Amino acid sequence: MARMRRSVLLVDERDRMIWRHTIDNYIGFPDGMAASELRRLGWQHAARFGVSLLIGHVASAVPDGDRFRVRVAHLPESGMPGRPTPTVPRDAEMARLFGTVSEEAPLDVLARTVIVATGVLGHFPEFPGRDQCVGESLFWCIHCDGYESIDRVVGVVGHDEEAVETALDLLEFTSRVTIVAGRPEGFEVPDSRMADLAANGIKAFPFAVAEYRNENGRMLALVLDGPDRTQVPVEHVYTVRHSIPANQLAVELGVTVRPNGHVIVNTNQETNVPGVFAAGDVTDPHDHQMSAAVHEGNQAACAANYYLYRPVQRGQGNAG
Picture (cartoon, helix red, strand yellow):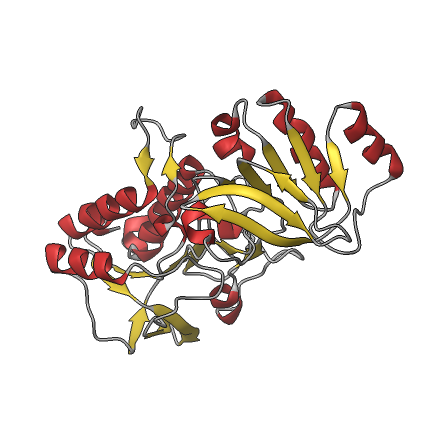
């Protein structure tokens, strides 16, 4: 958008890009790239072309005539619910480095277009040491991280068919897989699926997790909330929880969402509201890959730029 000479404000809520994980599945970085470092490079890249960067929280967004009124508030010191712990010193350092970060929140912004890229919440449970484990020994997506679990002792926490499939799929990487329901009600799958787990050497425990034992970013054991407080040794843990789209902003703007909360877009990332576009995880419950987000972001930016052209630039001139 900035390279098309548009005035752009990027509001950064310190999302999953500040977990400690490494992105290994994005072409061009054969040795992988720390997510936080890719975020820093993204800031630097955007700043080069004049994008205004702001660390804050979009508290509200509503149509205002032919514009959208967006209110940006201070980001709470504790961060947003479901987000990683904020890295304030690093962000402050980046702000000084690029010199383009506004620190005047709260503020109201009038925009002609809005691109919603608010992501999802809810992949990981809350427990002491969680943020240090994410990307090191705590995962949720085997497409992203299954390769890291080759020959590891792996625990899957989840109670439904998706969890069962994840446990079975992990057998492509390791033969040492255990599944824990993660709730007192046990599993919610037919007996035939429990039999499939047993036939493939996967032990199943129908208990909640009382404690995620970890140390310095390494998962050590799942302590079960059962009568014997059984400890299941693990090196890696995959939590299978339905993600929650962060769609509040989109809904306030009048955007239509699916029953599962994900924003509905067409192939140009256009929503049902003219001038509002969406990209990334908030639009899809499955394909949470960096490459997919980049593609959708590019589509949204191109479509938003075209939306801003004058009618004559879109072949709708009056001259004849």
